[in-house]
Each structure stands twice: as structure tokens, then as C-alpha cells.
Image (cartoon, rainbow, N blue to C red; front, top):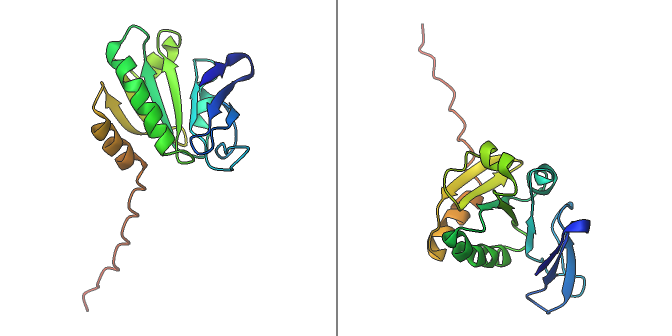
Amino acid sequence: MTADVAVGRTVVTCPHCGTRNRVPSVADGFPRCGNCRNPLPWITEAGDDDFAAVAERPSIPVLVDLWATWCGPCRMVSPVLEQLATERAGVIKLVKVDIDRAPELGRRFQVQAVPTLLVLRGGEIAARQAGAAPVAVLRRWLDDALAEPDAPEPNPPEKKEPS
């Protein structure tokens, strides 16, 4: 995968048919392969200037990876996150943010350790994970974050005592 920063697109090879597709950083819905129409992994980068458009507006949940180039655990977790995004193509969008290049986002999300992972739903934080973890732990954390919260049970009507 390669990023084309000037036009805000990433080239993604379809895991189903091998076709190379240009995937925009910002779009409605989720990307599909131009050849086989299967969902594509949506993996992109964002910074201080474009984070709102890239990560807060999508209709699907967004997994945000707040990382740093000098961080060894960040480099170890990155392929795991890409694997999870590929497994959940059409379900999530993975947005990578280098906090050294996006210091405002680091402050906004109060990043004290890297990597810091967030799941955003409608721009709001639904889950947070600080530090690297094994793939099984991250998969379980992500699945829990993606699970729809149970609808609250309606309160039964109060029984009134006869007077």
C-alpha cells in the first residue's frame, strides 16, 4: 500500500482478486474493489489539518492509531492493525496519526503513551487502548468496541398502590 498525499488517496490491493484500487481518504460509505466489488480495507493517514474530515465524519467506526516513528511497539502493532482492518473491510476504517507530525491531536486525545488506539463512532471516543498488545488481545478489544451497545431495557410501569 502506498499513500498519495497530494490527492488524499491510497492504493490498496484487493485481498480477494489482487486488483489494485485507489481508495480516497474521505468518502461516504466504504470502498469496494472496482473489479470484484468486495469491500476493501480502508487504511489511511491523517494529521492536524484533515483529521476531522478523515476520521470524524465516516459512517462506519474508525480505528485511530496514534503512533510515533521512533516507537518500537508502534512499528510492531502497525501490521496487526492493518491485518484487523483487512479482516473487517467494510466494517471499520483505520486512520494512522503520527503524533510528532500532528501535535494538536496528541494534545486533544491526551496521548501519554504510544501507541494509543481509539475507536471513534460519529467522532466520539467509543473505546481507548494505550500501549501495544498481542493480536488476540487487540482483536477482542476491537470486537468489544464494535459491538453495538445493548439497548436499554424499558422501565416497567410503576404500580400504584390503591388508596
